[in-house]
Length: 493
Image (cartoon, rainbow, N blue to C red):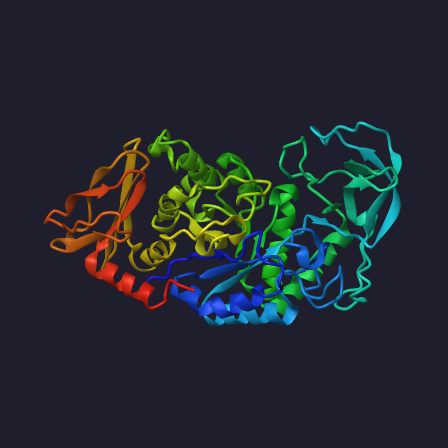
């Protein structure tokens, strides 16, 4: 059976700060493999400036994987170093690749301040200075006293950074660019230049910074055995830097090291431009498609479904598109909140799991729920995952020709699948499955429709769907197999 790449983001923002997540991942490994996942994106594993309360994006010490007493704790939010390494081994032993979350843009929680000359940048246009160079007190000295030089004796000071957003002397928050420094180029053009995001912003033109990150990358791979990377906030880092970093690590490790970049932008052309800038050394999350799903879930039936995949990275560069419905940034309460409503989740997941284009990445909060916000798991998700595992194979024929009802057919050698969805009233789609399915009984795996459809000799039949939902029609024998697997625990935890 063809193994299709299926990824899982194995965390959500409001996981408890109990230091148990790496243990959960290890215990969950066989279950995740049974659902058909081939790759697991684990959260940032290094110490953040809030210690055990840090989700991982406020990076303090890249070398501290939950080993040193720093920022008020030894473990990170997710656990200790040895538990992280054990979880990676367990996931890999079950046939899955591990994607490490890599945050290189900034540092937070410095150990000491420095007096620096800096110019204040205009908030709307970072290319404009709105003050002359003035002395500020910036948190830029990282000495890592709790680690004591183990693994690396490199210490960070202001010369490693371009700027900060806090002057401790004046008790003022603003974007300050250090005198003699320039914002990095090859970044997003929002705010004129979007190099600066938060904290102390790394200067990717400084040779010592590049050399230290090369050393760290090699150490991290040798230490963890990770298979690939999820790269955070790539729009804020010069594109050519990642070309260098990834090619260097691939050459030194002898591993392919697949990489997935997070470039948060609604415009697919911006994403394809970035891919070309960095030499196509990574794939990108299909942010435009996520916003299509969000619009679908909030448009009250007013979206033209013929346009669902238009203007997306999946439509433009399917081989380089990582598709997703939601993630830790889009979930309720987060800065990029754009949550896809519950009723729409099965439709959206059918679109990323059951089609040829793109590589899907499922969200932990959809698979297991988000107790913090009383959000239950997306009930249809285990069925859709197993439908991808067993039925989403062979060629694809699209029927994307109606504003309210669309569908597609997958025709493999031993199986076929017809998917139809609508954001309007109950409907049907006349579609043709493989002639080899003639005489077979098809049922709706999601059980929204109870009828049984016998495929005629020519393979063409009307496949119905309930109002505002999706139906996944597969051979009855395969549906029984999937239901049996779910009942025996294959889709449950």
